[in-house]
Image (tube, rainbow, N blue to C red; front, side):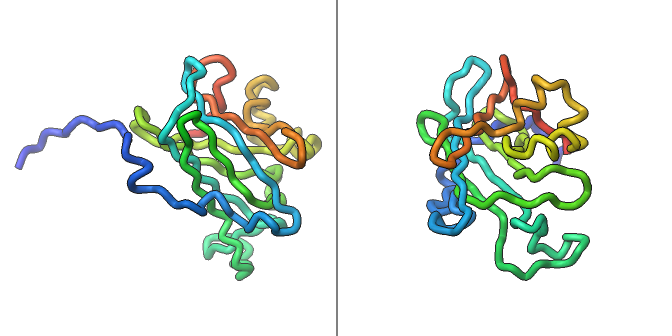
Length: 182
């Protein structure tokens, strides 16, 4: 056995083989009262689509609580898991159908946590989706307030008509999405 460290390998292009979950984009059924659809594209530094990527989401329920034992207020036992997963298509497109989360009570504006996996990334990326109709809460959010306005704007979804929101994820370059170090 050797003490030498082996080099890291890139992720993929096998994400569609191992992480496919055909209904994973449905955090809630599409006919759920208050359901919203978030669509977008994952784009590389040149603006080209990133196919065979995965966008995962994790969020609180409409009351700002998690049905998880680590929620400091205790489990909700609501059955709302708050987790979604969608593979990107050949054009880098993804979609998530969910509900708008409530504020979690510690000064953070309502948001959805996002993890991105894609070929060529040695480590996953983390970001957030904030909501455009939460201007006052967004202005007070500690993360958004710590960023220059043009960078904070990369974390706020945009209305796309018919109640849909659009959130493009740019991995580098102009308008690169802000990524979090967790």
